[in-house]
Image 1 (cartoon, rainbow, N blue to C red):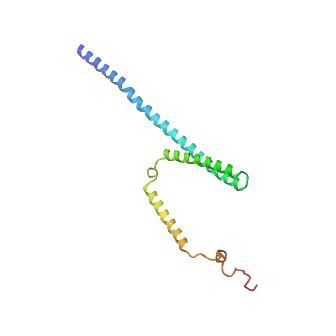
Image 2 (cartoon, rainbow, N blue to C red):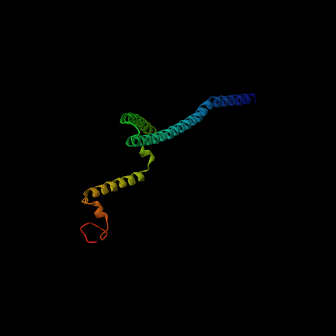
Image 3 (cartoon, rainbow, N blue to C red):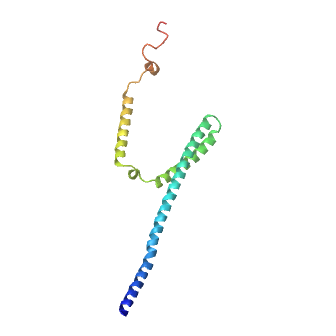
Length: 155
């Protein structure tokens, strides 16, 4: 009976030591998941910030062009600010490329087929437009027959 109690105590002690040893390993996996979730949240926040910055830079470049055309800024100021905004936009786009997953991982194969078909259709239409004869007077060609009023016809 005494051997059985000693054996149970030894087994209990071994189980306690095993649990004590394994616990940090299990806890670190939970912390890793939390860390991975935190990293993903940080990545998503950075993506949102970069997308906002991209939109802001595009608006600034558009406004800058309008200001130049309206004479609100000099050509030198335009060139300086345009170069600065474009350099910043390049940095933003490069960082967006680094953070975003490749398109092949985001888009299912069916979407690739649809995109390919759309591209082919667009190219075909562009080629047809280039092959169409050019009218010497597109305004006259666009008007319906019988409504054309030119100086040579009687009124």
